[in-house]
Image 1 (cartoon, rainbow, N blue to C red):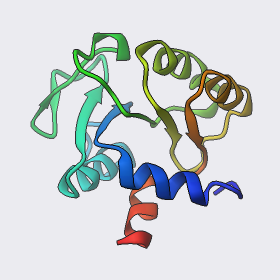
Image 2 (cartoon, rainbow, N blue to C red):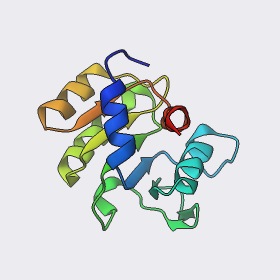
Image 3 (cartoon, helix red, strand yellow):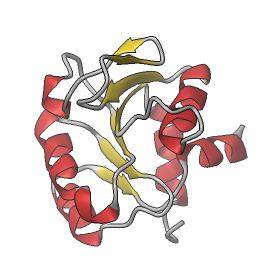
Image 4 (cartoon, rainbow, N blue to C red):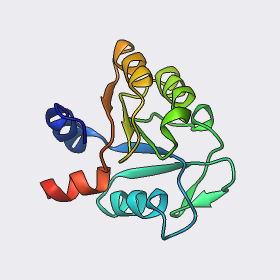
Length: 135
């Protein structure tokens, strides 16, 4: 995890309700499945975003963030570091309050773009592990 993110993580875990998960997987053994499944069990509303899925975790899946018909508090990214830029732009455009890049995902340029647009940003941290630490 990148240093200096503890306050942001605490604030997001306590205030976020609706999470759009870009790259949610249908494979239970992948972090893109079990992390959002865990978060859903903790009471967060999970919206799957994956053009290859029709539904996941009992929720309708959407092909992209612009197709999600409701407000999103946080966009959780399960995409390679070099691929997150367009998703961060979409998060800005749909009015998300924050972008969270999972463990191993770091894109400083995309993070700066999000911050400049007023979004909070977490990089290289597992949302499930951070939630468990605070539970």
